[in-house]
Amino acid sequence: NAGVMQNPRHLVRRRGQEARLRCSPMKGHSHVYWYRQLPEEGLKFMVYLQKENIIDESGMPKERFSAEFPKEGPSILRIQQVVRGDSAAYFCASSPGTGKYEQYFGPGTRLTVT
Amino acid sequence: GESVGLHLPTLSVQEGDNSIINCAYSNSASDYFIWYKQESGKGPQFIIDIRSNMDKRQGQRVTVLLNKTVKHLSLQIAATQPGDSAVYFCADFAGGTSYGKLTFGQGTILTVHP
Image (cartoon, rainbow over all chains, first blue to last red; front, side, top):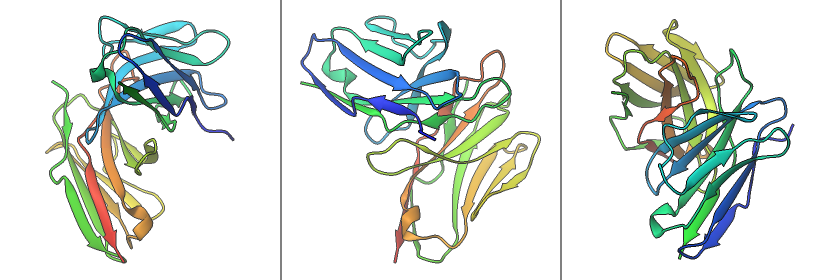
C-alpha cells in the first residue's frame, strides 16, 4: 500500500515566482489536508478538501494561496508570487473519510524562496 | 480558543527506560486526539489516537492517557529505544461540522541515549 505521496520533495523558487505542490492521497482516501510547518514549530492547518470541494480553508492566507482537489489527479497547493516568508515545509495528509478521522501524512515538500 | 501545548520541550532518557510525554489542551470541545512522531526531514507518523469517551488506550509499547477533568493528555513509551528519538506532537480535533482541522502542539524532542 503506497502512502501519501508528495512532489516535489524540495522546491526552490525566486521571489515572485509561483510554487505548485502536489499531493496524492493514500488509496481509498477521499479527504486531503494541507499543513505548513515552520522550523522548530508545530504544523499549522491550512485547508481541508474533498474531491472537487473545499471543506475548510480557515488556515489559508487570504491572498496568493489556493488549493484544489480535482475529480481526477492529485491535490494541488498553489502559491503565487512567493515571498521569503513562504519558505517552509508543506505537508499533505489524507484520511479515509466519514467516521474515520485519523490523518496520515506524506513526506512533505520543502519550499525555499530565494 | 483552541490551543494544544506541551509542558516540556525536551526529554532525555536512557535506552530501556520508560518515557512520558505530556500535553495540555484548552478546548473543552476537543473530542479526538492523536499522537504523532516526526523524525528529522520526514512527515509526522501516526502513533496512536484516543476519543474523548475513553481514558486510556494501549498500542504496541505505547499508551495514551486522557484526563478530561484537567484537559491533559500523555503518551507513555515503554522500554524506550534509540529509534524512538524524534519530535512528538499531540494534536486534537474540536469536532463540529469539520473534523478536518487538526490543531498541533509545539512538540517535545525526545532523545534516547544508548
